[in-house]
Image 1 (cartoon, rainbow, N blue to C red):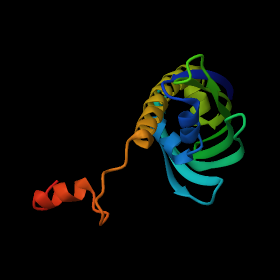
Image 2: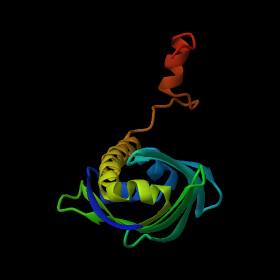
Image 3: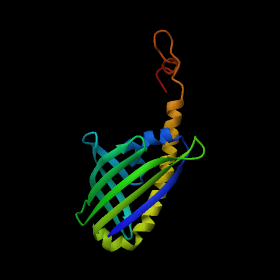
Length: 183
């Protein structure tokens, strides 16, 4: 069974900050409910897992993500994810292209994506009719998480560095020492 998805999510930060997050595959995976990157194999290959409830079944997939291409000029990334249910009853494949588009306000942008998701086995037979509805719920939460994390990344990079004295000690170190080592 194949499902075609096309989504757009508002992001409350600049396109540059959103693009920085989008290129970080483990950070993007952390935005997806039930997903995590468990290992970075090399610059373009990752291992991970996803757990999701589809219809009456809860499925856990282990798989790989490959970065097929990054176009910095377009702020676009293409990924191929494949996975196998840990019980061996289902498999899934997703070909995703995601990009950051400008908004009228330079302090905001949008995350857009197109994906072809193919599932086989038990998940297709049990949850096939519910795939689009479940995907919408998961992706809406992902969009919110992505926007929140992109804004947090922007705030962290915009924060001034801690003050240091001539020896390089920071105010935070002085506060820790003054507290007897307690934070």
